[in-house]
Length: 132
Image (cartoon, rainbow, N blue to C red; front, side, top):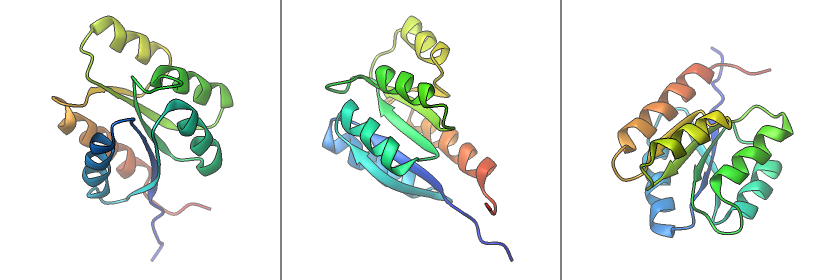
């Protein structure tokens, strides 16, 4: 039987309690492995380059570089990485801008955690299977 390779996830949020909660929730999803945590945009980019995650969950309002700036840098690398922006902002224009810049999802981290989990679960399910 072929072994399954987990979806490797990077979590970036400057609030330690939010980062912990996201990690707890995402770790419960079958096929998800949290490979790193970043507290700001610069650290998120450094870890992205070092760890090459399959999926990045980026807080929009991080110090040094915002989640949107990190998203732009990730997209410029040409590497395949699913990116979900999480935020407490509710402005439709901001959501549309992030999606237009290449985000695969935009989720309100207080009221839409179920949507975040569904997006990550769907990504992990799509990518499950042997690699090689």
